Image 1 (cartoon, rainbow, N blue to C red):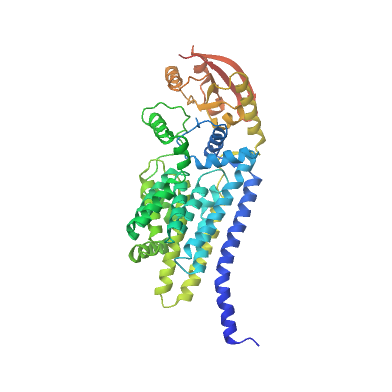
Image 2 (image 1 turned 135 degrees about the horizontal axis):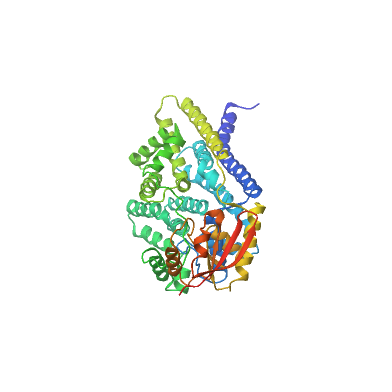
Length: 479
């Protein structure tokens, strides 16, 4: 017959095992679900296609021409998959996988600061955040950067030289996956150095931070300097050897991210606020306050504000909610009631955010869109026919996909609704080398009559396409 002590031991084991089993199972099921979504309707965003093209450049031993200011880790990874013979269709599977792994890593980090069932709830909050769900099914850096950040935080909190080196290495890789995360990484590293106040900790941070870039610096000593010079030339001097994304992001208020938090977190926003105060006052989990504050302030000051950038903030949001819940449970007179209420609120949040994602239209090119795919192939073949391998082309829209299907460098032309032929000519002259072809698409608003009247443009061919209708191809003659 089972004794009271045996029953107590069994309950204790269940309380220990169940949260981690639930967290891992939830992340695994979530990953499988998102993989099915991604494979059923493979979606490639503008950014994703640029990363794929840059991966091709690395694979061919060339420095990326397209948006070279983008960090190298994801393109290098995609270049490796291409070297293994994996095509564009496979590219959509990686982001759900690394995002799901981020959920498990978040649990491992949070269990260092709170009881395990709260850490498991934090995994649910992170993975069900609408931004994480929506953007996890295409090629992007966010999931990779989040995984590296969390892994770095996990190791660096363990105060040994070896773990600090490993943690700093992952933080460095996170930076070279997504540069803006320096807003988080630098304060975090400074906090570790100041808090521990040992030279060995500073050494560990420096060694780990330099390890990822050491192979490039040793093999190509001028690599970093050349990169900085090219970015400076493009962004400051205007000598762009890269196409530029259209200005589709509308101006938004500096309070954009705080407004998003209030709108989406609901009652969890109160718990998050308590978690912030607890992290600052008790210094327990201050790493997440250092993740939250610089990120929100820094991204609020940037002119390009998009809800997509909440992705890497989501782990800090979930962590602060967990810290706030832990603080409440320790200080409230009825912890069981508080705990049940918190779980209900987390469940409501997860369901509500999932419904929000279901109502959002996908953004990007769906690989199984036969009309658009056929259009890219037709226009890509025509571009190949009228150019050499080293020539560059300008087109009105969808230039990363035209680059992929034509195996040429296709830049953004910005000729839609243009009324000044001289402005178009000056723009074409600003590119180096000068473009060979201009692809005009009335579907996107190209002013064909104006383009035909320009002496520096000669009409080569009119192509009929399933998705865009007629596409005009002009030979460019500028000097």
